[in-house]
Image (cartoon, rainbow, N blue to C red):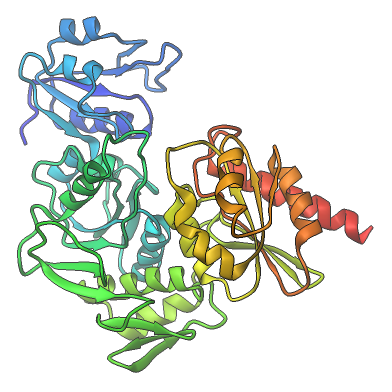
Length: 439
């Protein structure tokens, strides 16, 4: 890609947009301007002009020769298309970074588990003495990594469907497909649109390149060398039995005592093992690194255990599939805490599992009434307004030997700024309640 002398519009002035603007300037762009529809938007770089509260009229007046999108900005809305009315191509920050990236890329997509797998692969590579950085949706924007004086050998890139909507030449060295389930229906008109965007990860990969795909998952147009894994079936390269990852029926590693022992995290581990093997990392280094890995927070993390009751924080669960995986992974009776913003999802799919595994469901937030109606036919269901109220109700319902699983199953934006704030609210409420019980 040649940017020399070009007039470039970068849409979105968050970290990704700013990184894209700085990379474009570093590669010789003649003029780079940030645009944001938010009138309160600010830019920490005084040398890069920003148009806050930008309108479609501003877009047309600018007459960009290239439009670069931050991941959260849709490519097909009138505001975005106004920048391209004169024929300017639209690409995303990930595509721009790819054009100037000189190292190797391991790219991870999936409805759930992306961040844990990305962090785990980075951890393994570093443990093996290789240079690597987690980036994309987790860690650095790829463009920011390109600007480092000494970029690492590996970009371990978490990619969302949003980023894959605007790729052109992007091609990872290893592609990982963890799973797929309906999500982001507040952005996509059809679930098929969400699916096709994710499939684009493999669009430019060649037949000899490895695609690591969960067994049973269908990936449209996949022509890569497929390597499979699953915690449910044993038809792929790696499987999971009890607490042990197996290969062709033979034990590979026992995850008992690690942070990856639950089935959904075992699948993340299997994907990471296969990916690191593909780039030449020895099994001894991979398996050693698995034993001391700690997943990022708010992903089925242990908050406390008192009176025989285990409290788990899975606030990162922002869709039904994630909650389903968390529930499936539990071996103890469950008190499930679920709720948040209405994303237009149908939660009845987990009713058979709740009938078998849940002692009680505590529902809260904007979607509480819908969840109460959905879950109550199969499980005792208690409706609350807030997370602290839900924690108090869970303490009343739980019995010794139970797990209280905070796995909301939808986004947090009805009451919180994000899943991190929601998870911290849960942690604080649990600690406050348990401290009161001990007093």
